Image (cartoon, rainbow, N blue to C red; front, side, top):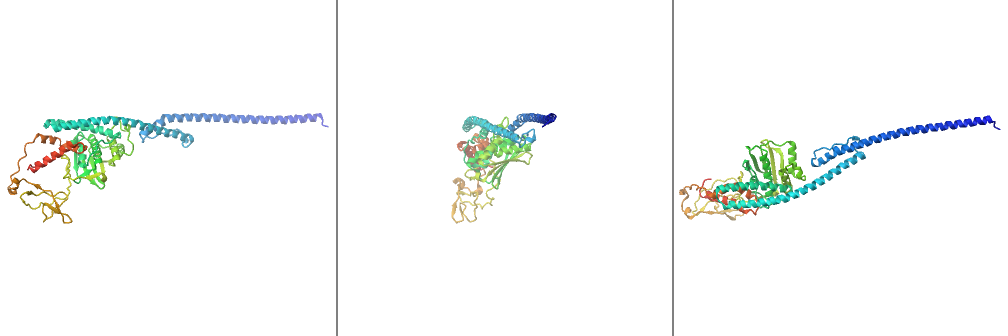
Length: 478
C-alpha cells in the first residue's frame, strides 16, 4: 500500500513534468510565431519592393519605351530603351512587357499605313483633276503656236507652255508617288529624245549639257519611254537645285554590258552619308513609300523614282560622288527595255544632241561620175559599196542585186556639167515660220517623248527637220 507522501510526491513530480512540457511547447510556439512574423514582415517588404519595382517598370514603359517604340515604326534607326531592371529580361514579366511593345508597334504600323493610304487616295483624285486641266491648257497653247507666226508671240507662248510643263511635271510626280499610273502611253522613241524631253520640263534646262555616246538608233520600248523621262527629269531637278546657278550639269549616255546608262553629274555640295543612304533607299523602291516619310512639305522626287524603278525594272544609283565634287546619279536601262529605230526613217528630234558614234567608219569618197540624170548618193549606214558594182545596186552574199534609193535632179540642173555648176545661192532672209520653228526647237524634244496621241507637235518637229534638209540641199552652208 502506497503511502500518502509518496503519492503526493509522485503527483508533484508529474505536475512539474507536465508544466515543463507545457512551457517548452509554449516556448516553441512563441518562437515559431516570432519566426513566422519575421517571415511575414520580410515577405511584405519584398512584396512592397516588387510592387514599387513593377510600378516603376510600368512607368518607364509608358514614359520612355512606348514612345520610342512608336517612333521606331517611322524611324527604324532609333533605339528603344530596355527595362529598368536588367534582371527582368527573359522573365515572364520581361517577356510580357516586350509583347506589349511588339503589339503596339504592329498596331501603329497598321494604322499608319491605313491613314497614309487614305491620304494617297485623296491626293490621287486631286492630281487627276489637275493633270486633266493642265493637259487641256497644253493643247490650247499648242493650237495657238500652230495658228500664229509672229515671233514675239511665239516666244511668249513658248514660255507659257514651259511653265505649264513644269506644273504638269509636279502633278505627275505627286500622282506617281500616290500609286497612280504614269498617265501616258507612247510609241517607241529614241533614248536621247526621252532624256531631252525630261530636260525640257525643268527650269534652268540651259545648264544641262548632254553628251550622247550611244549607237545611232538606240531607242526605248513604248512602256519605258515616259518612266525614263520622269526619272531623268527628277535626277536633273535635284542636280540643278543643289548646285550653284553658274555651274553646269553634265549628262552622259553610254552603252554598258547589260544595256545603257544615263549618268548625271553635278557640282553641288554633295550629301552626307546618312542623306546618301536615305536617298539610295528611296530610289531603290524596296520599302513601301508613305507620304509622312517625305517631310513637310513632302519632297517627292526620289520617292517617285523609287516607284518607277520597282514598276518598270529600272535601276538608279545615287551613292557615288561626281568628279566635280557633287553627286553622281546613274540610271541603268537594261537590254530588255531597249529597242532600235532606223535613224533614216525616224530621226531623233532636231534639238537632241547628235551621237558621237557612227554606224560604220567613213569610207573614202568614190570617183566622180556624171550619169546625166542621177546624182550619186552616199551609202546608207551599215552598207558598203564595192568597186565595180553599180552605184544604184549592191550585191548581198548570194550575189543578188539589192536596189538602192536614188535621188533625181531636175533636168535643167542635169544639163549643166558639175564643173560649171553655179555657186550656191546665199541663204534667204528668215521667214516668221522659221523663227517660230527655231523657238520651238527645245519644245520639239518634249513633243517627241510625249503621247502618241499628241502627233501634232511631233509632226511639227519633223516638218522643221524636213525643211532644214531641203534648205541644205538648196546650197545653204551648215
